[in-house]
Image 1 (spheres, rainbow, N blue to C red):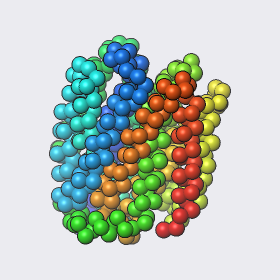
Image 2 (cartoon, one colour):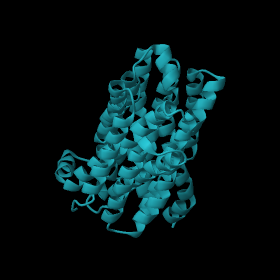
Image 3 (cartoon, helix red, strand yellow):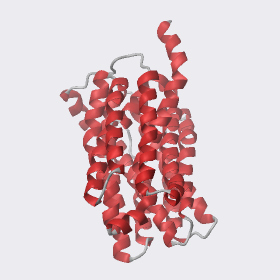
Image 4 (cartoon, rainbow, N blue to C red):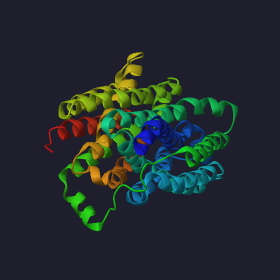
Length: 383
């Protein structure tokens, strides 16, 4: 009775925590996106160099997500995040103190060490507190990602009007301090660990074809969305459109989480839903090149919605899939770790194509092709 009582009492709190932890991850990741012009001018950078400021964080995310996931399976997600959050704060303040391109790259690199723990922690949190509605609850923290993204893209331009980019980063780091303290004081878990992950288990996962399907989906969703989130403020500037309208992308991100998550909970076979989202992603992203206002704004919204819909389904699968459920933290760490191949490469390619062509058309087409082909073809693969 005690466990059931605690579950009923703390479940809403922990779901709220999942939202704000995800919010912090994307706030920290995308805070530099609206700073593209001011940082490039101050540090004399090319578009590709600025793209690497974002992508360098993905290197440490890729390296450390699997170890964090294995640790969370062993000692529990509660203790794991109590270690990771202070690391995030140290390097977020170091980033705000950066004096040049090299120091900014270094702080971004090490910031990823702490942030890497968040994805496997969120998967385990949903597994413990809401496994009966894994799709919807995954959608809740997906909405947290979107809100952090929207805050970074929408609020930062206004902060830059009244302060420096370094001061803006200090404000965001301050929010991280508050969340860290509240997590230490209020967060709860009914168990100390989920599963003791072994080398034999790791070999089993590598042989499971479904792991690789989820991995390809994550590479595409994370690479496509992060490229658009990083570069849409600049693309809108090139179109002579207010860069703050880039917040329509994370608005689609925000709604896709709970909407697609709820649909996912209702249907065991998600292939048709994935196929529809793939077609929608290809069309809406391509339209970013040509659509006039207000259809440009609709294209931004549906680009975020369709890509994130696939992300929501993918991240719920380690909890819902019978073979993968016992290893949920480690599976989440593995696929989200290797999934960072997309965010590592795609933003740099996006910027490089702008440098080469002098425009954004080829970059947008590349994102549309990757999303459309991956989601539609991947939806046809049998479990």
